[in-house]
Image (cartoon, rainbow, N blue to C red; front, side, top):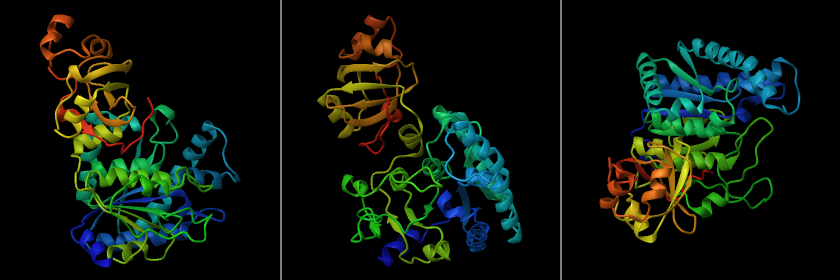
Amino acid sequence: MNNIRRGTLAHVKKILIKVGSAVLTGHDGLDIKIIDSLVLEMSDLVRQGYSIVLVTSGAIVSGKQRMNITGKLKSIPEKQAAAAIGQGRLMRAYAKSFEKNDLSVAQILLTLSDVTDRQRYLNIRNTLSTLMEWGAIPIINENDTVAVDEIKFGDNDNLAAMIANIIEADLFINLTSIDGLYDCNPTVSKKAKLISVVNECSEEIEAAATEETSSAGTGGMKSKFQAAKKVTAIGIPCIIAPGKKKNVLIDIMYGKEIGTLFLPMADRLNSKKYWIAFTLRPRGKLIIDDGAKKALMEKGKSLLPSGIVDVEGDFNLGDPVVCVDRKGAILAKGLVNFSSTEISKIKGLKTSQISHVLGHKDYDEVIHRDNLAITKQNFKNKI
């Protein structure tokens, strides 16, 4: 297995590292010793020539510690207030630790709307690229102080997967509180075995990932599995590993068998299609027939109005929608060339009939193949 790991890591230069709250939490709040230890390892990797981008949790934990709050926060305003207090303390801890290693840091706080807007998405990519060129360490967190459900990433696993795509990372390391992905819940079964390598993110493997979270974190192993599935879809290998283990980052890069390695998929999405598939929230749903399903899934064709059976939702030209078969299975997501009202009028028709029905025809395709990402149920969104 070490040969697989060494081969996977041989050409890695750019690493996205995500550190979860459970890793950063000690008995009385933020664990500065863990931060110093991880920063020392990251600094060592930088000296070896690697570029590092860090996605970190811990702002809420830090805020609770500062305000002497024990137990879980119950309301959104409480969590946002704790994040407002803790984010500065968290960044200060990282900044002091990196400064000891002669490295500068840059704070970036994001909401989902920052990456769903294509122009802002590109601006983020340019900023991160510049910071890495300057040798600074970008430290990214969700802007919990202002984020609400509509603009939240859900958890930092999802945020980290998106950032890995934005920076075109060569490797995504997700540091958590357990050793990796097991074949069943290790807290329930003593027979649970650590899965060293995942060749394909199958339904059987996914079933082993639990949704249980720690008292400090928001995402369980299910969330980490979904993040791994997203990055491997664009060709980025992922390693889920124990963040509190000494020298974990150095050992990973030496090819030691630590945690669970997810190998990249053979059929990869390009950056734009990844953005469509995993970043944009769908505004509607198109139910398509078997002919259209075959055209999309097997022939790489665009979606034409003739293959659409029904339309759900209220959306406009350019909005993201999911395509499902008659049984409701998610097949693809894409950007539409017509509104939901227009598609309802032209569904089932030939392209030659569009102009007669609508009075205009700017496009032949409802979704052009360049704006269509085949997902094969790699993500699960609710309309």
